[in-house]
Length: 226
Image (tube, rainbow, N blue to C red; front, side, top):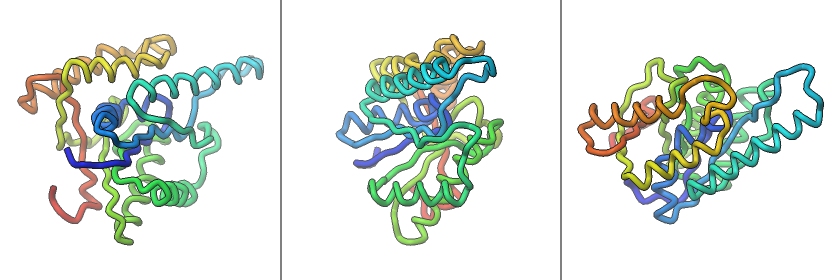
């Protein structure tokens, strides 16, 4: 791994940033890097009959889950203040990220691959990629990786593999389990079996001995091989 001091993982919704960048975040944080999990939007109660108090309590608990998960990964966390219905224009979103990357001296950003079933995942991919590309054209060396989630697999090509030892694997899953959705309390998607099995499959295909995660390079904006 390269020596990097400022890492961000940017996810469209809560849990996305941890799934996409969590394994690298915990590794870099252990080496002393400042790592941040950025959540573009937060969920909300969709029940039209839900009282405002219930909606506020739901959001508060989700933000607490963000914080607890980040702490377990050795990172901090921010929410950009959006909900699904009030996403900014793509241009404004990209400019906000560019400003943040410059001010924070970000060296590596991790986000969604574009081949997704979710429009907000695609919006996040486009804004992050556009921001990094523009900064690279101006001489800023910020790098970009796309993480893997089950929702962004169309055209996703595993290119960089990282193995996690038993302690790191336990740390990552402990952070993910801070989310009610990961624990199966929000919907019936089998998050834990899926990501456990995926780590075993990636280990086989990469000929690694331990639990393995993978990333995809931003090949359309890289101008040299690493």
